Image (cartoon, rainbow, N blue to C red; front, side):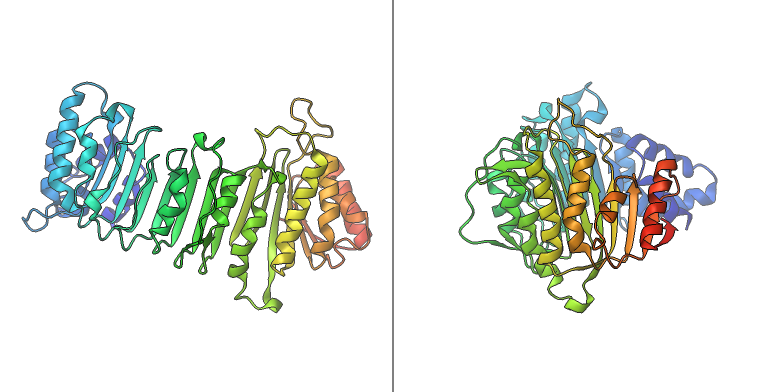
Length: 448
């Protein structure tokens, strides 16, 4: 039990601290020493930046029954060892990987631009018959690794590829989890990368900074089939790229979709939000739910430069911090239409609505004309409330005074509302606004 707790604690420490804890625990008393020496799992996690004698000690104690076989977890960030004797260190790391690749189950490598021409990176292209998890970080612009494990890693289930290199995932027949960084060098092939991995269950795509100004390629002739995918996340990409990916994948088993984009424009749409493109994927998620059981909770957050909406299994976020336009009327219309389309296209019956209001400014900043202000919040709520008529519970986070007028502006707004919940920290004006809602509509009040 002690060893299990100890191993859990070690997951959150760096290489030096892990080494100190392991060796220190073995010196408490003879019994602790015997226990630690007998636990191969303790010795199987090796940071290659450790001194060579320590690496050899760990490797020896990780061996199974005096054989040359181990279940190794290898971690290496080439900058953690400093710059002295770098050539000798690279040679030592290269030799280790070539000799022990057949014993490695988890491999985490982080290389930097100064390693670009090193033989060390070529050691990754060696068969890895027992590898199950691989994490690769390469600095932007590095293309030193184009082939992985000589296309021979039959047990690889998890790959985290934070690189700019296009990868062929077809040699990995049981790959289930993929984290992929997409930049200018590999963006054109992102759909082909997914096409070659039909076994994927969880996919996370993260955009690199150089992707912002890159034009989106033409749609493929046929959509990409991802028959096993249950979770898809796309983050740090412009809405044009998100729409391109979302519109060209088919995920019949999808259970969770997470989109976090930067708002962009297209020739046919000055405010291109990919939320409309996500609706076809969401429809497959909700198709199996009978219409009479489609009651759901909805979370809505509005900020000056950001809009978030969440329902079970779905999160959508768009922001326009670096977006320069001056048409807030069109922006408000687009946000309102997006919320309404989400509810109506899926035939949802919202039961609870949470409004998280983070808008504070009464007037627009001249330096950032495309920002939401208090009047915009009122217009958005006024537009969407008819769609939320089934709502019985309303949670208000942030300022109540901005939500209250929208509720009371029409008697038909939220006609089934019976409960209002707020946070405990309310100033005098918020308390007055809350009391007005409760008194006028005869509602029950609770703290969130």
